[in-house]
Length: 145
Image (cartoon, rainbow, N blue to C red; front, side, top):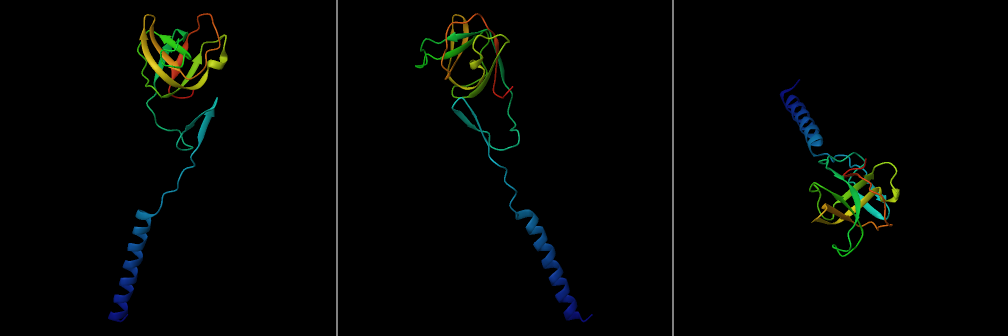
């Protein structure tokens, strides 16, 4: 092979290798489909079709609680003895124990307020209260159960 031809071949080969490396480094990663979860008129963007990585929080409540409007809504609240690990405006998932009078309280909702009262701690939600119930405990999480 002539020296000039050899130099051209090396240059073309080097350009091909550099192009391949740049392609793999700079190529656009495939985007995931964004999904939205909707429950009872409340929509939450989950970000992608894959399960997001979140710190799992759980709080045990001892009964539901009519908030009486301390958060300006007077909606359904849940009372428990320990301080809830959640924040106002956080989306939560309620799961009552079996035999609950109003299974409509279960599912996704949003926190309207968190307050300490004589009975313990109350998580006030954006769900409407349906009426008096017997004592009914359950859990609140920040992920679907």
